[in-house]
Length: 139
Image 1: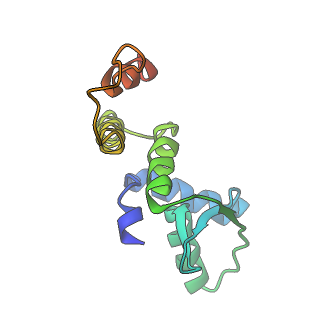
Image 2: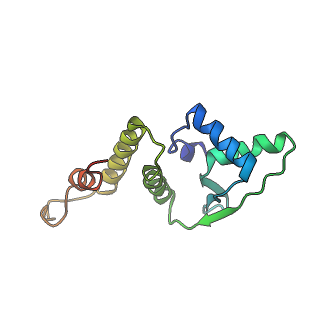
């Protein structure tokens, strides 16, 4: 789980406090997202901060209702790719966190392109860096 947790930037103290306040007042609005791996374990892939706060509030004796939604992925790598893209869609990222995640996505996508490329026409496929630059233009 720690390996996947590393793909989620930490919330600032103020953001975590606001999330806790929201959960205390309204409950957990969004489902915790999990992936069931080949060993039939459910691994948390989205909702780490909510999960931590649920535990804290339950330890205080509060009953916290929440839901869990399972997502289907073909591999751990597919999960990691989804997590990066999902995090990049969040509004609360700092410029540094956004830059880090973009770089991580770039590195992961470059790794997926291994193999012999001499026979491929580079005009048929945009280079990863150019494609991602276009995707994140202005962001």
